[in-house]
Image (cartoon, rainbow, N blue to C red; front, side, top):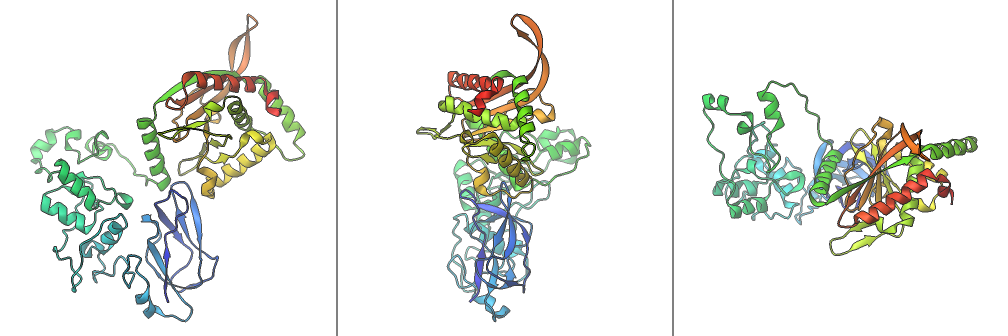
Length: 467
């Protein structure tokens, strides 16, 4: 009997993903353990292995499709000896007898007209469509076609949502969808009806009036507080631009950092650390470890100093949990790594108990696999404290955004020659500016300052890192 291959949940928090690549084509033989596809999540691209053997009967979701919900069928696997006629017997995950491809229900291969693709996706968001009659049509009548935005893009919406919106006079282009991939579902339309804030589109402005109106006034519907549409502004003022597709990772980065700045009360503490003793120790350790292939970076020593500082001030190694403050028993240090797709933070787990050589080798391995999109979810999810080091880019001083639910992130600038006063006399030292961003719900100013003092002492007297 045919078996549905479902969109896998590659992490505990994953709800949808992008089907990046198929490694098997229709008709190909599939063995248990074969890599059949690659799935792009918010932070990595991961391979999917076959759990059953057979023949790839039908691919339901094409490569490059974004916003595919977890547990949605993406392909149908046939048993050995079964032919294409057996595809009709594939189980329907919604409880029916047949799993239909997005273009099979209407018979004309046009999901927009038949509503099949939209109803399947809408159902995965908890939207229950009305029962169908024997002819397969909705008793409430055919849903209107999906509207388009001012840029000509189709508004993702389920047939039921479009039909309710049509009857209530709701402008779907003014709504934000809560379904997979931002799809507008019935609940979104019903909430708009209750608010009474979404109306039919305004009549078009006469050409002469439109020319006089400022670009911001001509912009289409936008979410509250987001400002005018940059595309329309650029077009209105004749500014050339190229659109770059937003990756799943970049979407998650944008959402999480926006949430952080809107919901986490940040405050900042800054300290200057003299690096000369640390740089001397690093040179000596690298000379000793040359034969073993150990080459420590300044960042490796900073990771160790942060972990050791958190041992001395454990109250700074904490997270806000609404009804409690979590005090972590170990320091799992998230270290920001820049990749082509965006920022990712692989974790040095229990860094306080590891030697500098171990931290260095682990960090090199994690950074390489982060740039190759090969990290496992448990290698970048979690962490108790973050470090963001832009010193190698020539940045002297900056403030980083906290990565919730963590309570702190340390922004590290470059080491540079600066004048300092030593024993009442002017001297020159290599100085590094570090700024601690703190969630004030978790860590008060005194605790943050105490941690920075401990960190500074370890950097300026680095032999303490060897203990």
